[in-house]
Image (cartoon, rainbow, N blue to C red):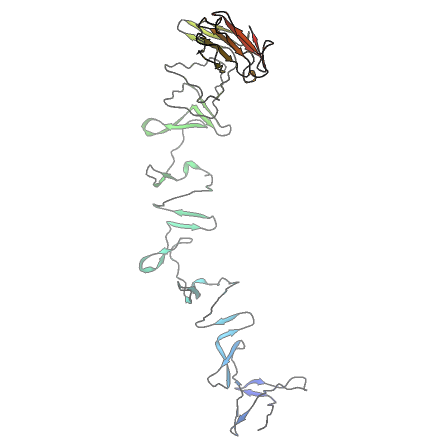
Length: 400
């Protein structure tokens, strides 16, 4: 058997399948192993002419033919499939929006990841109405529930329930008096509320007046520009006032006239500063006065000093003033505090209260290298004698 090249022009169904090359030297040829029955050539794929140029070629009903498949087309940039398609992976990019969505067949994906043809459900209701499931599993919408994508606003007419509701980015109303508001009642329910018109001058605080009406007064105002609230008249408070800073600014006389006690501060490190003179009065007259101008203090009462008793060795504490010592049983040493921990001018008195200082001396001792006058110690040797000392707040004590 010989092998031949089939040359020339091959025509099927009045359409050219193969034809010689245009340069006249070489020919397009169907090359292969051919055999036949004397009338037909076998083992040669025959191409059936396609009515549309972008049909993809598949094997026809005869294994020896190639047929253009009208349900599978490719025009060089787009692939068209009319029927079911199966793929282990599908990546859809650069999808275009159809010109007429209502008449477009869509691709949908079910819960098993299968892609299938789906006709879009026609929308029901006015423009921008939110679609939800209605009767008989059909979609529907309502003018009572609208989302405007141009204004990014959701409009709800009716009751709305939510476990949590967060409202952010709320715009300032152009005309609050003519605007319907959303209010929250004591049970946390939202309801429509029409704001009551304000009464009174600008910045006046609104409060309930007669017949459940809203009113305001120029005697009670709040200016948001200066963050100041102004009250003309009396302020009566039943309860507590809490403030980080509490300033009372007045050029006249301020009176706190009420029975009961007044407390300032709640911890030892609180500091209460006042400027000017201070007087403490009683029903019988002035008890105590600090004169800020003349820098004097007048005390018109008895004075109680802090006194501690010691029968054995004792170290004076910073809040002590009188140290009463009884050395009847043995000599006693009283040690002064470190002068650097005291206030300049702070004083102490050590007294022989037992009258035994002659027999059992009472020694007052400074700490370390600190001095009492020019010595490290001072001694009480006379019965019922005493010694008063003050410090410089650094390293020395002095006997008065």
